[in-house]
Each structure stands twice: as C-alpha cells, then as structure tokens.
Image (tube, rainbow, N blue to C red):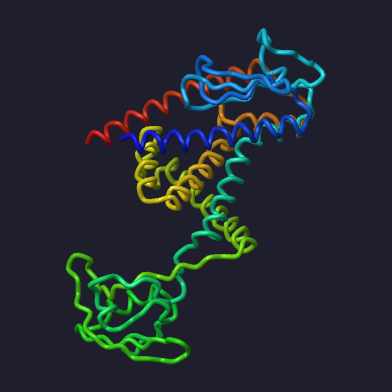
Length: 344
C-alpha cells in the first residue's frame, strides 16, 4: 500500500508539474504575467515569491494551477497586477497556445520518456526470429540453443518472423522437433522433444526475443511513431466506448494508484513506460473538446479566431461550471468503482 501511494504521488506530481509548466512557459513566452504557480489544491503549506511569481505547495497533492493576470475577478493581496500583461487582452492565437501548452507538455514528455527507454533499455524485437533469452528447464536450452541464434526453420517450415516460431510449433504433430538455426554465419541443426503444455495450450520451446536498443536519433523517431500509434489507439478505443462498441473499465485515482504501485514493483523501466503512457493519456484527454477541460476552452478560442469575435464570457463560464460539476461527478463515480474492485 505504501509503495502504491508513493508511486501514485510521484506520477501525479510529475504529470501536474509538467502540465502546469507547459501553461507557465507558454504564458511567459507570450508576455502574460504569472502571479502564482501552485502544486496541489487547498490551503498553502509553503510559498516563496521569486521574480514576481509566487511558487506554492498546497495541502492536497492532487492537481495544480497557474494563476495568470486577468483570469481572476479580484487580485489577491500579494499580487502586483500589470494590466498591460493580462491574459484576456492577448490575441486569440496567443491565448490558444497558452491553454494548449499544458496538454502539449504532457505529450512531449511521453515522447521523450519513450525515446529514452528505446535508447537506454531497448525493446523486445518481435520481428526478427533471434533468440534473446533462454528459459531454464525448457527444451531450447536442452537442445543446445544459445542467445543470438537466428531460427531459420522448424521441421522444414521456413521462419521469417518471431511470431512464426510459436505458430509453427502449434501446427506440428508429435513432440519431435528439428530446428535449423544460424550461429556465427553457419547453419546448425538442433533436435529434441517439445511436448505440448496443457496449461499454456501450446508447445513451449522456452525462448524469449532479443532486446534491441536504438541510437538517440532513431529512438526519437521511433518514440514519436510509437506515441502517434498509441494516441490513435487511445482515441479509437475512447470512441468505441462512447458509441457502445467496446466495454472497458475506466480507472480513477485509486485505480491509477494501484497500477502505479504494481509497475513500480516491476522495476524502473517498467515504471517509466507507465509514466509515459499516463502522460500521453492525460495530454490527449485534456485536449478533448469538453467543457471544463483545456480542449473545451480551445473550442471557444478556435471559434474566436474563425469568426473574429468572442463568445459571451458569462455564458462560456456557465458552460465550464456545468462541465466541471459533471467532471467531478464522473471522477467520484469512477473512484467508487475502483474502490469496489479493490475490495472485491
């Protein structure tokens, strides 16, 4: 439980700081005055003013915010308002960049974390039929296979990709197996028995794929490609859930805490991958065109850029208030479902 709590706080802390940092950097870039950068919600536990910005730590370490000039009805006593640097007087495209900056920062972090993982830890090569790891007590080790062997054929059936090793073994009749491998530029034949496993419902030879690492430049390219494909998958799954074509459980804070703890126990790189996926999800969800989310505000700003006129501020605020109430209700419902699943 303690590991899950600490892992959850670390994940939330990183996600929130990166998200609000994106808003902060975009605001500074476009010359908007930042009054406060807060981590957490509720009363302040600690605060320090530096370069005109109040950096604060709040009591409840969930969420955070960046308070900009002109976004509050009344300034706080510690503020030093500069109306010439107010958020509302900036052009629509500048406000668009500032609002979108948080979600984009989360997505960029997901890309960078994925790239670091690809360059430093690598990924399993699920294409090439090259032996990476031998599992103790399984036929491959007993037959004389070693890491680095490239599987050429199994019982005369040509092997081109990693997945064909399992599928070919599933088709053979009898336990006798002849595997032709390439080692050091020479072909060798390994023979032995690969019995059928009732538990796995397959013939298990006992090998795992090789791990490949990319150069920094290639890792950045492949990391971007991975994030793009994952984004398409996330949005596609979300659409299928909304239209009722996919039944899936949605995790709230409790569910994320449990997952964070589980991934933290599996090791640093597994946890890093989880952190990357969470940031990607957070960035994409915040860009959805729904009231109270950044994406909802972007819709109004996009309309302003197209039609050259602002939507009435009072009505926009009412829409976001209703959306925020619905969002809180959804979070409460999902959290309750998480608790029920955890107890069960």
